[in-house]
Amino acid sequence: KILDLNGQDHNDRNWGQVSLYHTEHGDENQQWTIDGCEIKSNWCNLRLDIFEGCVEAGTNVGCYQKNDAPNQQWRVVNWSIFR
Image 1 (cartoon, rainbow, N blue to C red):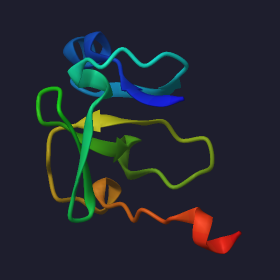
Image 2: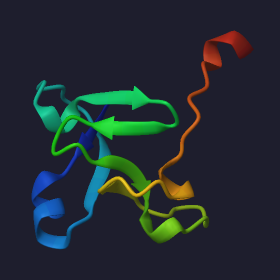
Image 3: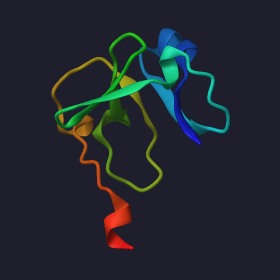
Image 4: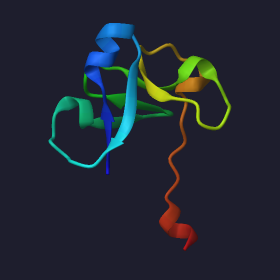
């Protein structure tokens, strides 16, 4: 699976839904960079974002413009060290 940003969704609502997609196609909406505590999409330089800063289980994850808010701060954990 690969993290896939719905660019049309972002164009329509100014916030793009992100999902795990079954096929890698290599477009910018599937390319990501870790920049400090942010996960940056190569498509329009957007940041991985928890919708409206909600903390409930099942809250949507998407992309939004960089705003330095806590809902755009991430920590990447290498789970292989815990096996």
